Length: 324
Image (cartoon, rainbow, N blue to C red):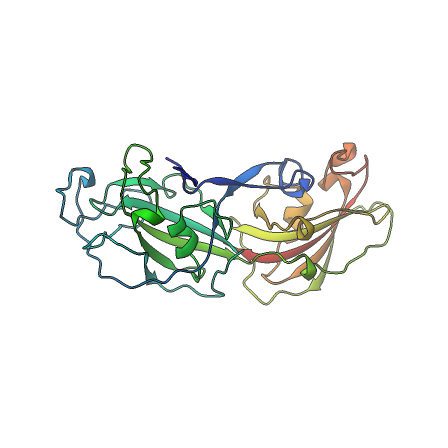
């Protein structure tokens, strides 16, 4: 089951890659696609509350008034959810594990895994672990339930946070799906995969490239050497990209201007071969200029939609913001 907001939907809106920015779409510089997206809002006044963890093999048959939890299932890393002893009347935030790095603010994107249950009986209605796909939430857009909108402010990468959400900050009197009924309070355990800072177009690097002929090999030039962890195979790199025609130096596209980080799975076959090879050895916080032979980019046909003619090399400036 998936969610969004209002009136009955709560979390899943799509995080779309700009069509004009073909670098991370069709085999990420060769296929334009959509990822998942969402949103949230301002920080609430919250209180801490005691929780209890009483696992049951069948959370759907719990007796009203008891406080069962949920079983974690067989998916690795999927947490058990401990429901509150009393139903929340205001948003309750409990940090089960402290994260590291900057705290999420309005406008940031928080990439999470989550389990959601009814607070009254621990009946699970959704989780991202079984799907194997983290869920991005763009804070401050109002596209998710208010309890998420407010409850993810201040969270840090690597943290685990529980949200006990009263009905009025969830679905209110509007049932949703087969489990959530009118007036239900909801409880979530949320693992924060990454906190991605909001993009300020004014932070875009002032870069121009000289026109030149085609090259025979991939060219790599570090403009800024990152001080963070090195990008590892199998991770997702969150990057900003500026792309240029190598023959004229004309800019083709910029994610700084579109205001959206571009997710690139760091593995061969996920994007243009030259882009993936060019990310090798890069560290978080780094900025790298890649001169990509057309054979390692869009091939001899070029890309009309992207504005790249046939048999034309590509120059890409990559900022590695984070990886997870």
